[in-house]
Image 1 (cartoon, rainbow, N blue to C red):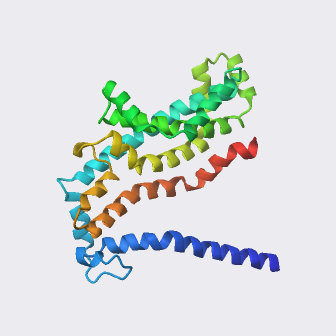
Image 2: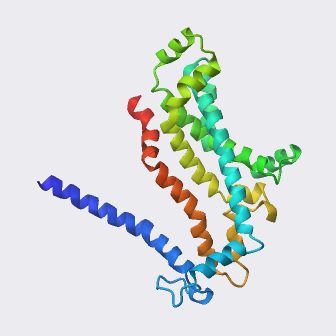
Length: 276
C-alpha cells in the first residue's frame, strides 16, 4: 500500500513539474500573442488589457505581402522532401549495412558515427553548393538536411532491422524475389514503427531549423518559418505581440504531428534495443 502511494505521489509530482516546465512558457507565448504592441512589450504573464487576437494574427499573415505564408510553403517543401529522401535512402542503407557484414562494415559504421559527432563546415559547404549551382536553392538545402539527418536515421533503422529474422529474406529469395522487391515488398512494410519515429524527429529538426536556412538559403524569397521571426524584430523596437503570434503559428503543425505520432515514437526508438 505504501509503495503504491509513493508511486502515485511521484507520478503527480512528475505531471506537475511537466506542466510547470512546458506549460508556463507556452502560456506566456500565447497570452502575449493576444496583447497590443505596448502591452506585450512588458513581457509579463498578466492577462491582456485589450485582446487583439484577430488583429495580431492577421497582421502576421499579411506582413510583407504574406511572407509568413511563403515561409510556410518553403518550410513544408523542404521538410516533406527531406523526409521522403531520408526514409528511402536511410532504410535501404541500413538494410544493406545490417544484412551484409564484411571487412568494410567497421569502416562504414565509423563514418556513420562520425557524421553524428563531426559538426558541418559552413564555408566549404557553401563552396560546394555554389560550384554545383545549388546555393540559395531549395534542392540545395534539402540535400543539406538529408546529409545531416542521415547518420541518426540510419542507426535507428539498423537497430530495428536487426530484430527482423533473416529467414524472411531467405524465404523471399527462394520464392524468386530480387533485392529491390525483397526490400520494398517484405522488409519496408515491417519498418512502419521506426519510420514513424524518423518522420516525427526529423520533421521537428528540419521544420524548426534556423541555422542552415540562414547560411545556405539566404534571400527574402527563400524565407523559412524560423527566419520569418526576423520580420518582427528591429534595432530599436520589437513587435513582441506579432513575434509571439508567429511563434504560435509555427508551433501548430509540429504539435499536430507530434500528437498524431505520439504513441509510436518511443516504441520505434526502443524496439531494436528491447528485441535485440
